[in-house]
Image (cartoon, rainbow, N blue to C red; front, side, top):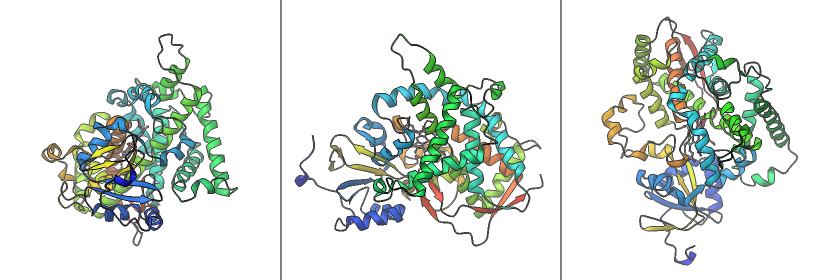
Length: 461
Ligand code: HEM
């Protein structure tokens, strides 16, 4: 039941007099607006037009929404637009459909299943590294976008995209840009206009759909099946296609062709830009922190063989590398905020949040909260010792979200992140191009607005 508007006790927050100004400010600088809003307390409130937004900035409140009372929430409205590309895949579906799909896909991301992926990931990383030349200056963000796309395609789709990588990468980028544009005011109107950007979007979607349907039919343009030679390598498409083809009499869940398409598209998009951003920020932070860069080099030099290629067995030994990755995602969380919409009125602290309101929670702000992270602005991988980890409240650090909608790819991302950092740090040092501007671009993920131009210096190892 909805509470009567007149009796609602709203938490404090930025002035509600000029909601349009606030909205425009939010589009321009969402993190800045949330930083200002957080000054009102752990629960604050503002309005975008008629929409009430509650900003929660305490680990306990975040845990309650994402885990304890998750059944009272659905994903927020922004995601409805994402459905135009992702359909009803894992990221965008709700209720039983989400539960069934999650159950089916989850085993693919089980730690044991992922071990054979390590060798394939390292192959992809080395392929990129072998293309690099000493003293070249490159936008490493672009490089990492290609790398992570390559990794997802080879491991999860068993599909070698080398010849099409640039083409697929271009289409995927067009779709990601569409998501970002979808957050603009009047996006739904703009979308209906015959603009070149809209035509590019439709074209990219059509091309990717065609590739995905060919993957499903097993008549793909790439070299599907070759990678089956890798020990126990079972890819996501094979598992999903099996579920499509098996005729269940016992009421078990079966995927339609369209659902297969939606989930493959979801993994295409969710599985690569996040990791690419995390790697980009990691090498930026290392370039600015010589001591930590040196420690990382010492670790990889002592653990990795002369060919500098780590295996799955090396991952547990790469302890400092893991801390570097964790600390980088603390300062620059690739998913910088999550949103939910209340289905029913929801009591939190002294406030009742009316059904239909949006709740926002930000990894970027929580991860820099001095109540939980001393010297929060400092890049300090050492803080991730076992004592600190044991004492941190669960949702003070949540780069992968939590609860039933937590990131399904988290174990995959850790393996890919650690292997990439170790392989690259063993062979290369990176120096930020002098004068290159570092500006946050918090779109769907937290990107560097102007890319990341780095000079590559080959290490003599
Ligand atoms: C550093 C890398 C990554 C970060 C920081 C990240 C972050 C997140 C977060 C925060 C969510 C939850 C969003 C919410 O609660 O609204 C999420 C969901 C999801 N992620 Fe990731 N992700 C990463 C990598 C990956 C990878 C590698 C894959 C797949 C290969 C993936 C696939 C997904 C999917 C399918 C969902 C939706 C899960 C569901 O709703 O059941 N992610 N991710």
